[in-house]
Length: 376
Image (tube, rainbow, N blue to C red; front, side):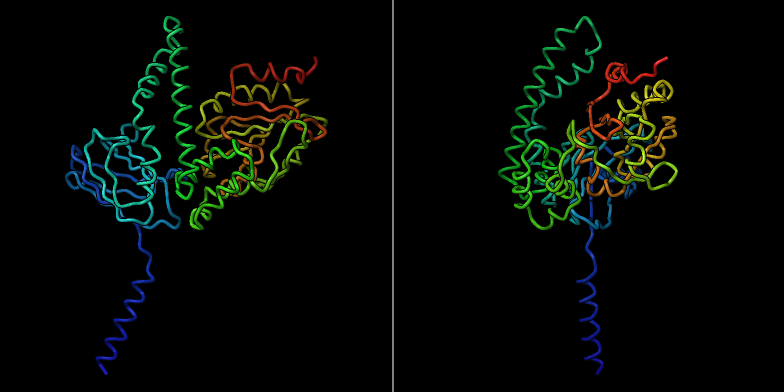
């Protein structure tokens, strides 16, 4: 009887052990790290930290569980515990047992990360770009000289060289998409480049991927792109519902056509430098165009608190909207083809899209929207 009870108990424990989730384990040994250095794991897709530890000598360990795999991460080393002084390494991991080895000089991209098939795929995809040291050198000089009149000609030539390199790298990455379709790097690449392909091609590529990848968060905006029509000049505006800064559920149609005003629909993001610059001019436009124009901002931020904090920072007084559903599926930003921010759409009082403006330059609104200015 005791033997039966023990056997049954052992079997039950074994079944429970099989059913319990197996998470990730990251074991690192990086020479050059001092004892008690803070190591942080940053989830890039959600823009937040998820784990941290301290080194024991030059070794450390992190443990946890990902509800969805794979995940794109940064391993950050806080130098002297400060956010302003840090090293980082990009990684793509599942719930794997991973080892990280190397030296502090190997940051940001040359640490050895082993034990994850997703990281191996990521390394293969990124190999041409990482090997292209000429691009890095050109970029450093361009950033150094771009505002120096004495180096204007050299800078222009280097930008041409950089563009040529980027075209070659883009071609190699596109080739990876079509020859290694069922991989996570291909899913991420397709997510960012889907607008460049016909929808039937995008559907064909997505259908070639595993059920695991098709269920990944980055596949959902691709499905949205396949299944919805894009907004073009001359089309009626695409209506949507979102949350405003007061916590109310509102629709874009609540603003379009009211009092005979035009609507400037501004797609923005809290960490976008040109968006922050544009907000300065938008604040003035609220006054200058008060009788003819209604500004509506829509934030593409991944987290609600990032959006709300940016409103205070930028003194946004006009309606600003955010949608958790859009973060998940791209149901708003994908039909409007928001590849980058800022992006602006001008909607006339009849609800027709009459202008699309990409990016921001000082005075660009006055140039494009001057005819809407109040008549004195």
